Image (cartoon, rainbow, N blue to C red; front, side):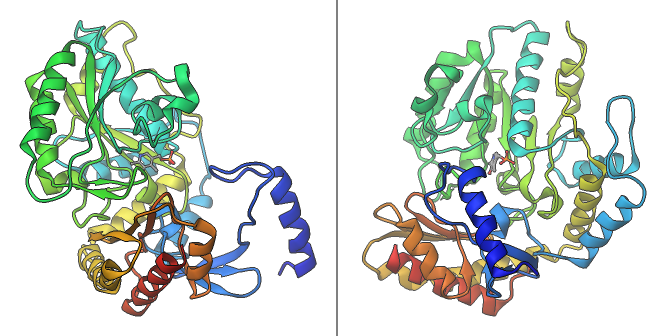
Length: 428
Ligand SMILES: *Cc1c(COP(=O)(O)O)cnc(C)c1O
């Protein structure tokens, strides 16, 4: 085990030399050193244990050191860690593609593997542009996206993120200019004003739109925002009406998080192109996939290029494919449904008292997601500290204190997360 003085040295180097996400360098605040994790707990260098209410950015749906996932990685390591995917193939990739296709909404059974969510979105956007070029509509290169969305941090993906919260202004001319519809309002049913506005936008821009892009049912990093599945149905209809593709980003919503296997399922809708990532490997390794219909694959594979112009170096990494396959195997047992419901109802009741607290604007829960929205920006250091002192790891952002715990979190641990979030809301 690393001694305290060694940690002091590591943390000093970390502060001055190692970037952390969305952080300055040198860092202004010190990260917590983690030495191991198991079940739903992170173990810190000083011996403290924290219940991980974040599932390591929404990925570790089975917690840490799950025996089936550990075994899948070990077993694969004994045959090969990696081989290139150009001109070669392997069973883990083929089997994973087959499992994904079986799980996905109908029609999405062509699979492109990539290494991160952002790249899956880039690939999806390129597919849509190539599709239209190949059917003789090369002017269709723009995207109709939703305000409040989040689709990743690369330039293409950033261009379809919320134009205000996504900080487009910081990158100015570096981003392609997209078309934005308002965020779907909260509440049941579809707001007729919203629908009219989206239909009008699509009509006005249809000649230049390659695809409509959305996170179905839950907008994640753009604001932990829940909206009625009816809005996804409207997007499907509008896309069909104008010969536009529907690109659904299920990187956050996929694999049961919102209560259905995919967000689109709640709407009874299939996309033409769909992205998955985050919890795909149960949080073990970095991998994503872009699924599309047979028609999209066929059209993209015709035309001038005769292929999809993308190929990540670590495409279909066998270790990642094997552990993803094991995670999909756990999902196939169907237990996730009850687990997600249980975690969700635990969060709902634990967070309910926050509604009456000063400074709280809204409290909401869906699937295994619980959110306390404040009426002011969270004091992140104070809120995090309040939760950590109660044995819970959270990472608030903007005005949001939220939890997306592993599906396997026990009732007691869910209750502890709720208590810690209330304390964070009071402190932050
Ligand atoms: C996290 C996320 C991404 C980006 O995934 P990375 O693996 O961080 O590149 C894209 N879309 C959605 C909806 C996400 O939640």
